[in-house]
Every structure is written in structure tokens, then in C-alpha cells.
Image 1 (cartoon, one colour):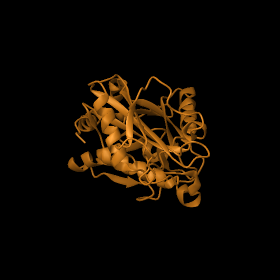
Image 2 (image 1 turned 135 degrees about the horizontal axis):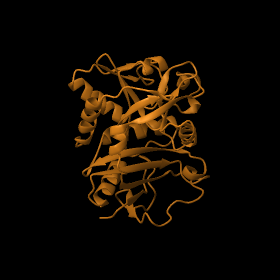
Image 3 (image 1 turned 30 degrees about the vertical axis):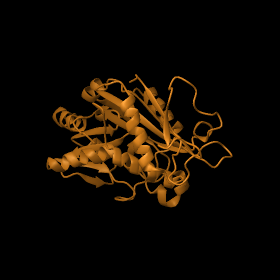
Image 4 (image 1 turned 90 degrees about the vertical axis):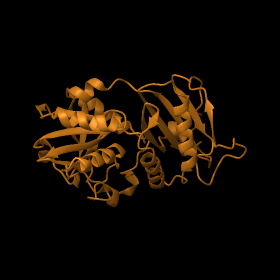
Amino acid sequence: MSHTALVIVTGPAADNATPGAPAPGFHLADPDLPQLRVTDLAASRGDGVFESISVIDGHPHALEAHLNRLAQSAAILDLPRPGLPVWEAAILRVVEELDPTREASLRAVYSRGIEGGSTPTGWVYGAPSPDYSAVRSAGVGVVLLDRGYRHDIQHTAPWLLAGAKTLSYAVNRAALREANRRGADDVIFVSADGYILEGATSSVLFMVAGRLLTPGTAETTGIGILEGTTQGDVFRWAEENNLSPTTVMATPDDLRGSDAAWLVSSSRHAVPIRSIDGQPHPLDAGITSAINSYLAGRTS
């Protein structure tokens, strides 16, 4: 067992395992030693995809959904189809290797590989999670920032990779720095034509008259955002509690007028929004606690 754990996925693609690689398609590596070549396109171009997976008491959550989204993101980037059984086994191996802890997080990275080569690379890294209890209770202040393109960008400019969880997070990080400059903790992106999209690292949920709502994706409302794995689990909880979970095309005024709102993600789970652009927003401590209890209690 170890504080952190790393598995190198030697056969990340379904049809392109590395010749001579160990039979499982992965092997343990020392997370404290250099592992990545500087010419890997993950580092030099951000050319790859990833998934962040929450682990509670040794159980990786929404694993099937994360693996499916990894494959969807890979397809959008024209990466070779990932060998999902190998990735699943690698993820479970990292979980086994970690010291017992209440909450941990994993990051599975699938890169196009060495520049000029034809073989993709991959790895899974796991570590204990920070303590998010305070932010799950007190919430965050958010600012609304223009993403700079229409909500349906995946149809008009698919090369912008809307809906894929790519390694190219420079814009997201810049948006978070801008939020900090404005005295806020986080950001919600708004499309150029005026629709709520998603957070920098999260999905947006909000409550209106007893209904739990979220911006849809390309499959539902035609909005080019990432499909949220945690949002999907929260919607299952909402169905069980008669909260009529629904995907909608929402405006900033819809969000501001909501009874409560949250940012949800694999790592922080449900974080209530306490202010929007500096204006206080109502909290619902009971629903926040119920959502987070449900998310923490998942065993798959």
C-alpha cells in the first residue's frame, strides 16, 4: 500500500497494445520517479483526454460512466479506441495500491503519444483527496464568464472539441484566475448567445419550484458541454426523491432566480453556490446534505 499510486497503461488502445508489454496491459510504476517523455503530446500539446474519478472507502464511483466518457472523448479527438477492460483493470489496481482513506481521487490520462509516433500512451494516478467538507457546507461564490462561442458550437465548429474532456485546460485555469481577480471562487461559463453552460471543472444544477434542472448536452438540448458523470448520479437521486430532474436551456436570469444552485463534480461532489457575480444566492442546506450523502454512499 502507498500514499499515492501510479499505473502505466502499456496497452491503452483496444487494437494497438505495445509489443512485448506485460499481459495485463499495464504495470505499477514509482510515482516519485520521472515517467513521461518530454515529447509526449500530452505534455507538449495537451493532445489527449482524461477522467477524474472519485474513490470513497475503496470504491471508485461511476466507473462505467467514466470509462464510457473516456471512449466518447477519445472518439471526438480521433484517438484510437481505448481498450476499456484494460483501463478498468488499471484503475482498480491503483485503488488496491492506495493506503486506506475515506476519500481519494484518480486521474486516468489517455494521450496521443510521442510526437511523430503512432502508439498512444496512458496512465492512472491516484492520491488522497483534499478535505472538501468546508466548501460542501459553506459553498462558493461564482462569476458568470462569456465562453466566447454559441451554445451549439459542436455543430458549427466540431474541431473546437465541445463535449470532450481534453487535457487542454489552459482556458479553464485562466477563467478560474479571472474569477479570483473578481473576488469569487469559481466560474460558470455562458455561451455567446446567452445560455448557461458549465463550470470550469463541474456541471451546474439548480432548483426551481421543486424541480432539479441542469443545462442539457448535445444529446438532449443541443448544448455543447461535457456530459457530467456526477450530474447523472444526482439526477438518479432526484428521480428517487420526486424532484423531476430535467435538462433545460437556461439563461443567467434563470440561474439567478433559482431557489438554490450547485456545482457538481467527481472530486468536490455537490458544492452550493452562495453568490453569483457578487450577489447573494439562496442555499438549501438540507438538499445539499442529502445529495452529498447519496454521492458518498455509492458503491459503484
